[in-house]
Image 1: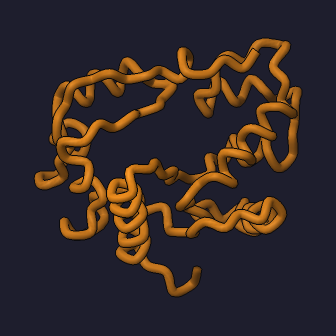
Image 2: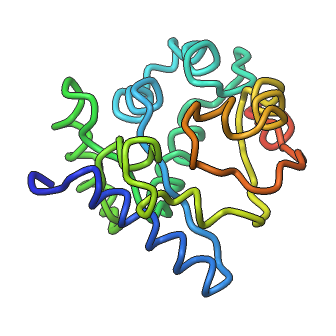
Length: 180
């Protein structure tokens, strides 16, 4: 990953999305969150409330089964096509060990490659989504809905990054999955 650049990372994302659109299948592109990674790596069940407070995992009542959540998270990572890794130095080595342990076969990229405003317009994956239906899963549904209604200028603050059609049919994380 040493020779990987932000532009190459954006290129991998754009190609992955293009392939998914052409083949009419989905794709999963993401990154480890430090809180989620800590829970997967160390499994501190007594710290389960950190998932709700800092990672948007709802609800985290006393009965949440952290072990089941960890298994589901690792399963999601194993099914991820592109993953931004190594972006947070304190967990970089442990992160690579976990990736090796779960035998993940996807493409590792730099985090900035996900963020379209860091690359030139021809490499922005967001251009592929114009006039496409996109599912946004977020624990911050109300905030996302307000931002999308304002348009791409409100979200990105940069001219040229388009979101396309802005009809909101968001699915809040609370409604999408209950961890109890």
